[in-house]
Length: 132
Image (cartoon, rainbow, N blue to C red; front, side, top):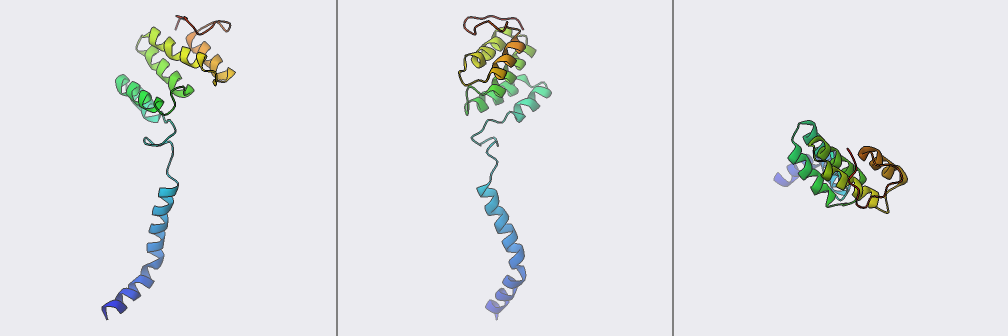
């Protein structure tokens, strides 16, 4: 009798059980690669900390994400902006120089770094102290 009752419940609940099991399997297979533990850098937490004035938390979040891709344009540019906000132009220029020295950076990315640091377009990245 007990086994028969379980069989009836299994038939009645099969669509619900398959829905939740399927969703769980889909979540495992298609997790967000940009999540905090993912392989792609994600700077949303750093932006939130910056917005809230939590500068040191923002810097720590960016540094953590840059371990995934140390020459990531978005992260380096954000880090330079935070250092500029903190009145640390030397550190800001250091981040911009990393972008300028990156052979994989696009001309648009290098141009953006030059504009952020107000470096002349013909300047080389090496040894620049630039003005922010």
